[in-house]
Length: 150
Image 1: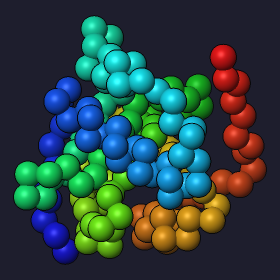
Image 2: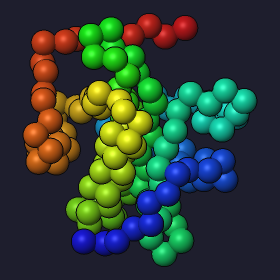
Image 3: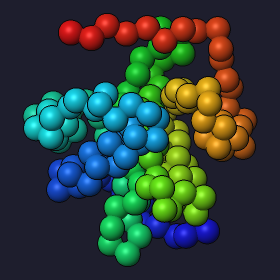
């Protein structure tokens, strides 16, 4: 297992974070779907009213992974974290960095008194599915993803 430094993201990390997000989009066969500007990305995370937080994983002073999350409210369960993205650069996958990021994010939710964490995983992403099963995550196929783009 590679021991990474896991720390909260800072604004100066934004360029590398967006590079990793674009790398993930390529893996997910949707490279043209990342349309957020750097300005919007940085403002949403580090501006006057940030709406997301993140942890970064560093190895040899280079960011090799991120966990980006925000607070979600469930009328049934209360406050929960929503894990938007858990990304580890391709060359570092399988080294334990995803586990370190995931557990840091889980621990944040627990320390804040939240009632759990939710996220999505693509049905064809078998390595990710197997990773989450190790945590005894509940997989719920009864909900359908719905979105509207403005």
